[in-house]
View 1: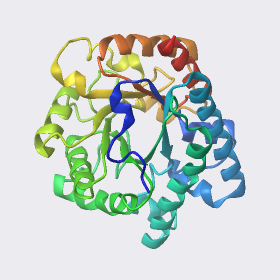
View 2: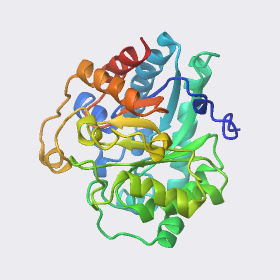
View 3: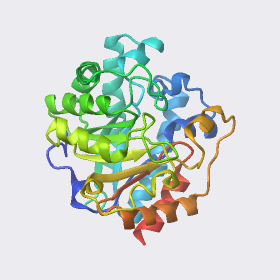
View 4: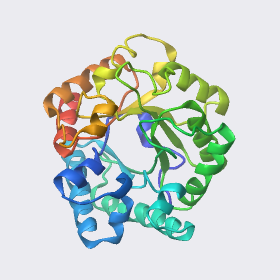
Length: 313
């Protein structure tokens, strides 16, 4: 049974961590192959399961040591129908993997949760298309129909919430939010931005967040920014406008490179964990409700530890 679906504890404002860039960690540090950047098939492989065990233990131990909360994010970013078909999974096989991905996290909550370190189970959702390039954009209704397949299944698991990452246009975000609302599971909406702080479509974060709130009667639990470096959006958030209060989470890249540069890179840019931690501290000064902190491409447990120390000390 979901534990926090009706009362997400991170809304209290206490500091919560989540994990880093799991896909880049698996590829560059564990030496595993992830076709289509999909991590969920690792659950069908012994070496994959062992790598995931190490990964989540490393991150949970940071939260436990520092007595802060943690969002356990299931590895389901690519676990939607179009991507699953490319990977050889049927609809039934995909449903089984969604359940398996959430179930994989339950023992970590059992081991690490305390009153100081509450462990929230989330299941990650990704865009239907490429996370960096907004091609073949769907209408709101198309997006709701497509993502409903995944969200309906996840609503029947122990997941407390769903988190959609790396969205690059507004209509898909609205569709996801509506689908989650229809299936009575809280949803966090995360947009990615380019080096100018705008979505790849040229839309601003303000336009995106306000449009989703308007079209869904403020359905999202909160908003997030991911897969961009803090220097890409720090100027965008240097105001005191009301929409900024809706941003509660950031999962930044380690690298300052653009999406296009990252796509072409053959080596991992790990950036500087301590510098990134300091930049998160500055983000916390600008975003009044920012309290759920994690990483994206190029980050690992070192970055999460540095972020925690910079923001919790």
